[in-house]
Each structure stands twice: as C-alpha cells, then as structure tokens.
Length: 228
Image (cartoon, rainbow, N blue to C red):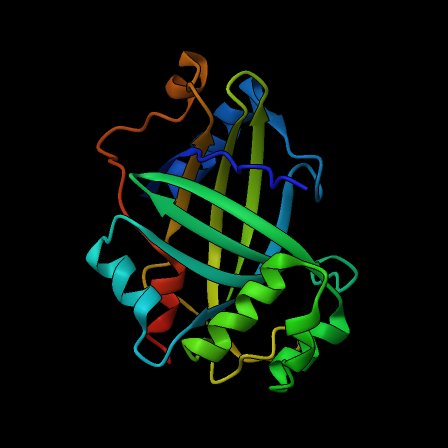
C-alpha cells in the first residue's frame, strides 16, 4: 500500500488575555460553527509529551529550529475509550500531525516502562515512537492540561481554538492518573490558534484580529516544562 502524504497546514498562535477571550468567543460564535466535540465546542485536553535526556524537543522549540517534531499521548474530557498517540511536525513555518489509536492498557504499560509490545504494533506511528524510545531514549516528561473552545469554518478548512486554564502535573507522568497534582502556568495565559489549509478566508481573518496582538511562538509544552 502506498502511504498517503499528510498535508502541511498553516498555523497562527497569539497569546491573549481573558478580556480578549470574551470578545473572541462572542465574535467567533457569529461567524464560525462550534466544534461538534464537547458542549458547544468546549472540552478538556490532557497531553503527555515525550523528550530525550538532552531535552531536544524543548531546546528546538525555544531556539526556533525550523524543522522539528514532538510526540504526545492525548485524551479528551478524561475519556479513556478514545486515546491518541500523535506526532506533530513543523517545517518552513507549516505544521502537520499524524496519529494512531492507543488503548488505556497500552498507555498504562508505557507509563510503567513496559514498551516491548510497541515494536510489534500494527500502527506505524507506535513503532516509530518505540524506535525513538530505544535509539534516542525518548521518554514521558510532562503532562499538560487545559480547556479548549474550538470553532470551524468550511472554506479553507479553518479551525480556530481558544485554550486556557493551562496546568501541568507535578512530578507525575502517568497520563491516566486523575489524581495527579497540577499547577497553573505563570500568567494564566489564553492561547488563540488559527489553522488552515491553502487560504484563510477574509471573514475569519477579520474575526480573529485583535489590536496590538502579534503571532508568537508560545508553547504550552515549553511553559509546563519549567516545573520538571
């Protein structure tokens, strides 16, 4: 079977404040459709990120390396029935994401350090992560929790998200442990993200415009690593 090439997408990120959040929530609701997930497009996300002993993914992000990738395990609203392993890649300012399903039992085995089964997984991405865990000593390093509100616009395949209540777990990398103690990241930021394919429609571009806000390389992963 010939593998399907994944499409790279454009991405904007803006760090905004709570007043901006309220204004954008109202404005986007009149132009875009709420994501069908969650309640009126709102849901929680928990991600477990991987890095190597040299913090390569973290350093590449901070240094703005043009071509980079990172692995994470993600679940939504604490639902262990739908868990995804994801690899997010970035090149020339464009982003791409590939994913594979994981069961709760498989995720727990990774948390417990039992990873031999990954080499025989039917999913190529799981085998790829196992290779990096073996060759580069990749391992779970931090949990990132936050609330997301998502809006969709068909033309351009646009997705606009508002992320807030960003928290990180303290000395805990068991992504299924609901009792992990967490703390808020400094500044209580709100992150506006806009992603699209070939073009960004003017109506969406206008809806997300904020005075004195500029695209910035904010990383929830990097912000949460300060607590390691």
